Amino acid sequence: MKIAFISDIHGNAVALEAVLKDIETKQVDKICVLGDLCYRGPEPKKSLELVQSLNAEVIKGNADEWVVRGVQKGEVPEKVLEIMNTEREWTVSCLQKKDLDYLAGLPTDLYLHVEGLAISAFHATPESLFEVVLPNESDETLKTKLMLSTKADIYVYAHIHKPYIRYINGKIIINIGSVGLPFDGVKKSSYAIVEVQNGCVSTSIERIQFDYEKVINQYKQANYPNQQMTNVIRNASI
Image 1 (cartoon, one colour):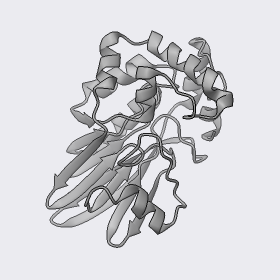
Image 2 (cartoon, helix red, strand yellow):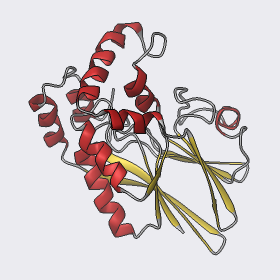
Image 3 (spheres, rainbow, N blue to C red):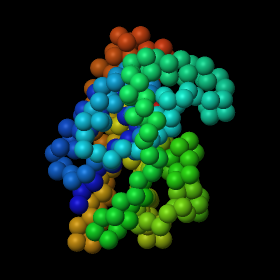
Image 4 (cartoon, one colour):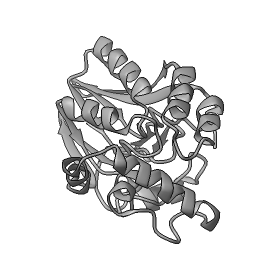
């Protein structure tokens, strides 16, 4: 079985369409979406509709939670709290009640059994939608933060927008990066493929070009309330 894991679309439908087109060429059997569908991009409604059109399993990210109930004090630096809630209000204005209900009702984790292997997938950590676990953390930190709550062979998460693959004690940890807002300086979407066949496991990070100049223009044309997001797209970095 071949599974594509995508996440952190953040309202960037241009990037999502590019990724989905690439996934089609890979002949995957299943798509899993690990959250952050709408918030902070110029096309929240279209991005959500694209995800809903897939025969995919979808879980919630922190940005989906923010769309539903707002960004709360202490969750982001105080200096950006007001603008992030303004962005959230703009995003909500593009959606309908049924969309908010859909986001509110998403589960927070995913557990798959594939040919005798267990895959645990979540947005940030198994216990939190918000906690940041970076690529350069120690093996012990990764085990404590990502691997203690479930017994799995492969752990897949998102949230940090910086893809990587690590191997610890015979287990695989994958961060799948971001479809819509890469933060690693590479102006390409990222997602992961996990293939399990006859007891063999193959994992990969895929990097896909998208028309980032088009997305930058979309932010401008939509009068998006935080034009600083165009620099995030342009630099693939916060």
